[in-house]
Length: 419
Ligand code: ATP
Ligand code: MG
Image 1 (cartoon, protein in one colour):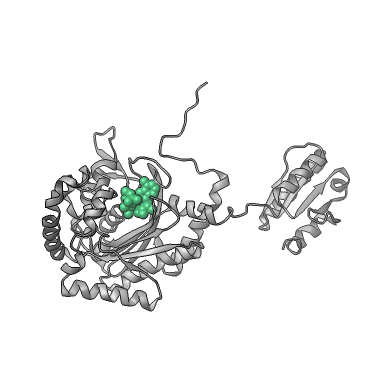
Image 2: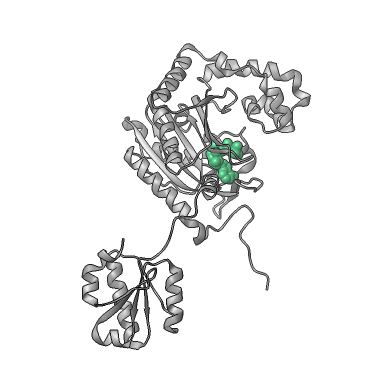
C-alpha cells in the first residue's frame, strides 16, 4: 500500500540527528541565560496582518513565501515565517513598551516559508532568535552581535565571516533610495525580473539579488555609507569601535541592506565559507521603527536569527553526533530475575544514572551482545542465582572483568563505577 510521506520541504529530525539539535539548544540556553536573556514562546500562527505590517508587503517573505489560509471562522491566518513580528506583538500586547527599560528575549522554533527546497532551505525550518528591546545604544548592537558569535564559536564553527553595514535612519535611506534608483534606471532592462519589479517598490533589495548579472550592476552602485547623516555615522563608528574592543573581526559590506522603513542603522550577517549557496547562518539588525509601526510606543530594538538547519549542516561536517549511551545496561533471565531487574533499573534511574533495560528475555549471550553495542561501560546481570540472593553481577564491557555485589551495595556505591 502506498504510504503517506512528509510534505515537501519538511523533514523528520530522527534520533540519529537529534543530539546535534539538543547540543545547540543547550549551548544557546546557557550562553543567553548568562547574558540574562529569557525565553519567550509566542504562538506559531498569527493574524496575517501582523506579518504584512511587521515584515512589509514589498518583501519576498510576505509577497511570495507565506503560508496563509482562512480558518473555519473566515479569519486570515499565517504560519509565522519569522520570529521578530510575533515577539514585538507580544511586547506591545502585554504593555512592555509602556513600562520602559530593557527587555532581553530569545526564542526558538519552527518557521514556515513557501520556498524551493534545497540544502539549507526548507519550507518548515527552525530558527533561534534574539531580541533586545529598549536601548538605542551601540553597546546594545554589539552585545547582540557578540552573543551570536559566542554561540557559533562555542559550537566549534570556523570559516565564519561577520559582515556589517549601516543603513542609517529613515531620512538617510530616502536620500540613498533616490540616488540608487537614478543609478539603476539606465540598467533597468538588464536587471533580473524580480529586481525590475523592485525598482519602484523596494529598490534597496536589488543590492541583495542573487542574479549574477544584477550583482555585477549592483557592484558599482552608490554606497549607502556615503549617504549617512552625522548621527548615523557616529552610531556606526561606535559599533565598529566596540567590536574592536571585543576583538570581534568583521568586514564592511555596503550592499547588506534591509528594504523597510523601520530597519535602522546596524545590519549584519554571519556567513560560512562551508555552506555553498545558502551561506548565511545568522542575519540581524536594528529595527527602531517596528514597535511603533505595530501600534506600540516607539522603542529602539535590535535582534538576529540563526538558521538551525544551516548550523547543523556545519556541525555535521565537524563532529560526530554527541554520544547517547547508558551508564549501565541491565540484562536478566527468568521470571524473578526479570522482576528484580526492573526494580533495580528504576532505582538506579532515580539515583540519576542512565540505565538501559533489556526487555527481550532472550538468551544471556544475545543480551550481552546488545549490552556491548549500547556503549555502556558496565553490564548488570541478574539470573536466577542473583535474584535468589539479592545480588547482581557487574561485568565491565571493555576488560570483561566481573564482580558480584549485593544489590543494596550497588545502589549505595554505583557512582564509583561510573567514570
Ligand atoms: P536567504 O537570503 O538565505 O533566503 P533570508 O534573508 O530570507 O535568507 P532571514 O529572514 O534573515 O533569512 O532569516 C535568518 C536566517 O534563517 C537565515 O540566515 C537562514 O540561516 C535561515 N533561513 C531563512 N530561510 C530559511 C529556509 N527557508 N530554510 C532554512 N533556513 C532558512
Ligand atoms: Mg529568504
